[in-house]
Length: 245
Length: 245
DNA sequence: TAAATAGTGTCTGTGAGACACTATGGC
DNA sequence: GCCATAGTGTCTCACAGACACTATTTA
Image 1 (cartoon, protein in one colour):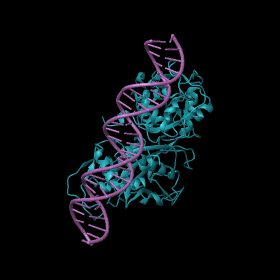
Image 2 (tube, each protein chain N blue to C red):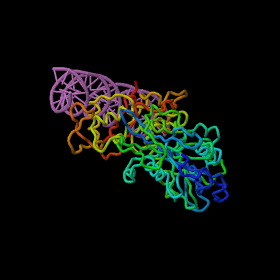
Image 3 (cartoon, rainbow over the protein chains, first blue to last red):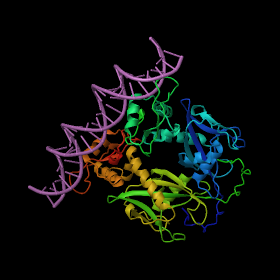
Image 4 (cartoon, chains in turn cyan, yellow, purple, brown):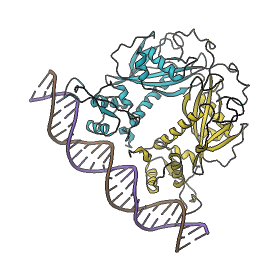
């Protein structure tokens, strides 16, 4: 926090200026794969490479507001939809050489979206595509690192929060929820045990109205649930790896 | 990440500049109380108020490097000592009005120190004092918020990391370690159970050489341990509140 | 009928909480 | 002796994993 004791008062131009940006790691689960939203860069450096969407923080807005604005622009989602989404600050990346042009400090955010039927191309944004996590080649800047950090964070948060429901539509079956967990964690889960634990955790999911639905087009229709209100899961739903092998 | 599509190339002065600073939430456990390092402000705004230590990020350094440098300056610890300390990024605070003078984005860091005998006043820093967490009046800027976030983070991390050993000297007794947990969590723990769980968690603590030591100056001398190498605790050591009441 | 998914029940091992008990030091 | 802390043992309950079994739909 200013002041540095020796700072000659507060000439904002005393130091070369920093640019402050936000980077977005936006995920969805599609076809049993974790997908991340990427944009193709149209300018140097890294022209033609893929990168995480993002942009400058404007003078009057916070980084969180900037992230939400950029998310709306890149996804073409309505302002109202984006306003209700779960957007979480991941961490800040500030290596002096992370952008070859100038000093850029970037605050990274993570967002989790259900697999949207909408084409999502709305905005003026350049080419933006959902890409399976496994298929992301080297990204521009330090975005591979940001992406890896974001995935780690999501995996950990799935254990002790109900965040996984953010990947599901408003009403979902327990089979769909389990699919989300298995995709993000990359491990198969025992269905009866998963069911028992989810239903035993207060505030995780609640029964939803509406007729049962078939998860994969086959089999017995499943009851529908919607996201509960609990911020944290008690008890947590631990990864199988979480226990010592 | 730049570019915002419409950004006219990269004139660093196109926008009013952002200042980037670091704020430090540095903790120790002293006399069974969580203490935080505060400095008294010598200039407006908030002249005479207490604040978290911190300062500007310099052009050639990352925020993490700036945090480590500031920590060394404020605590008077040797460069070598500070270099080995656990310093963790907490989050970034970027509300446009958080500093009345100009736009300041601050990256907050958390550090955990053992209760040092050294007077710690070494640096040129102004008045810096350890203050019990309970006695921190309103702090300058949004530092109350940062402090609260830092305490929450520490409490949570104590469950699934061996971070608590950072509050202990190089060799410590299990009684001292339990004291740290009880202080940070604010709950009493069952001694036999605490002991059993700590020793059953691989990599949490390891036996240390040296004669046993009395924890409170009374009673049977206790065996010494040192911090283990495990980054995460398996199984975790959950807070009593973690379970549903 | 077979295949696929949903849902229920049960056994067993592990670990957490509670707490009684013993051991070793200073006074 | 008393007191304070360290350290051990044991009981019980809750929960996680494994897995057998039934139920309901489509093809």
